[in-house]
Image (cartoon, rainbow, N blue to C red; front, side, top):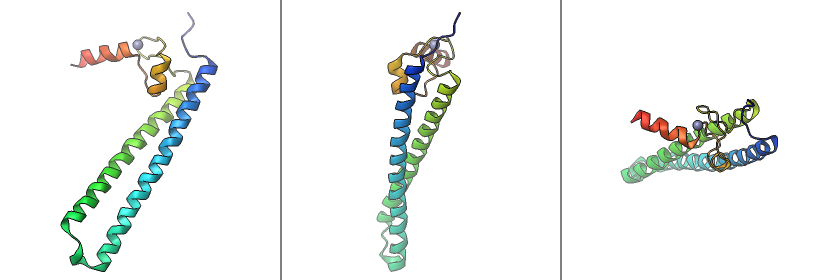
Amino acid sequence: MVPKKYTKTKLKQFRQTIENKMHDINGEMDSIRDSLENTAKGNASLAQDSVYSVHMADAGTDSYEREKGFHLMNRETDYFHHLQLALERIDTGEFGVCKVCGELIPEERMMEVPNATKCVDCKEKEKLNIS
Ligand SMILES: [Zn+2]
């Protein structure tokens, strides 16, 4: 029996979609990095002006913003990594094939979640087993 997999043409489309997503993420990460650097600069100049003029509330907001930024960076980095793995799976021919049942994962799902390695059925079954 021939193993199921997507055609070369389809894989090319997936690769394009994934690369576009990666490009978007790169842009987002740049702007997050920028805003993080700006908060850092803002804090530095404030501290130079006068230590006493820094209100605790402002400092709190800044660190909250920074934390949020770092959190976002982590999430984007994770996602980026997943997309890289998805590209590798295209190269190895595992892309879009459920690693549990070996069936093709529907195109719509792969477009939405390129890093998926299981079909919805197997994923649901797994959830039931865990709980
Ligand atoms: Zn499956």
